[in-house]
Length: 309
Ligand SMILES: [Zn+2]
Image 1 (spheres, protein in one colour):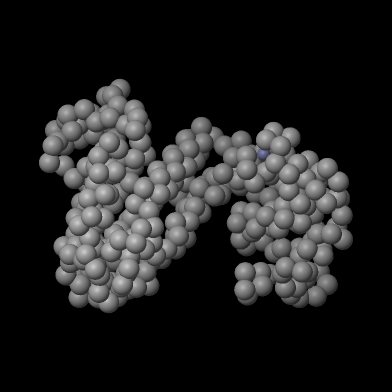
Image 2 (cartoon, helix red, strand yellow; image 1 turned 90 degrees about the vertical axis):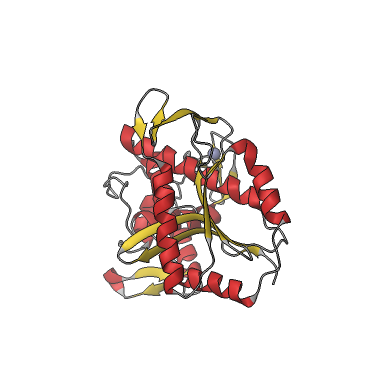
């Protein structure tokens, strides 16, 4: 079989929520930092995906896996199944200067940070045990990948499994060049791992918020600023000029409402309040009726996503 990317990398839910909260409330400095950290991490992972690509080489590429094994959760940024081995990549988008001393990592300011090589070792060990329990014996090669050209590590240990930005292209070219035709067994490993992948359901870095606290309105798809209604059918962002049909913007806003308040019922009244700049309840009701299923009667009536959504 030919190699390909098996699964699409999704924006982490925690990042999605923080991005919306950042527009609709003022985040604390700590939450803002965390938001930017997650955003940067996601950008780094996408950069790696773009580099490793969707080639026709004999590699199976699976981004973003989360497993629970023996009561421990572990995450893999990118996993590549090749003929003779499995590659595990921990992707970092750090920038600026760091240094390495006595097995510890420091910012150039002297502040110690978590040693990412330890995290890599832990993931490798857990993955090895997981694969063994499934009866697969391929050796694992794990690497810490720094995708940011502005990252530098002083006193980097030469033998550490680290790929720095200037080495990355060569590493990937090499990996592709030496890849060999895969068999059904490789496909089975991929399928099995995908079936064990779990979706994240606990978010540790999201501050508490309520519907009442958040600023209402429709935010721009491109820059997240609040939009203005040009007329009933069209909205525009005053900041970046993006225009959008009201209907599309309302559908996006319903999704956003559901993301931020998964336990609240979707009703015409609350979406009308949430969107704020759409001055037609009738239009919101029509959009909900067309795209969602109405459940319940009278005061308990609310909309739920159609099964196909
Ligand atoms: Zn905009």
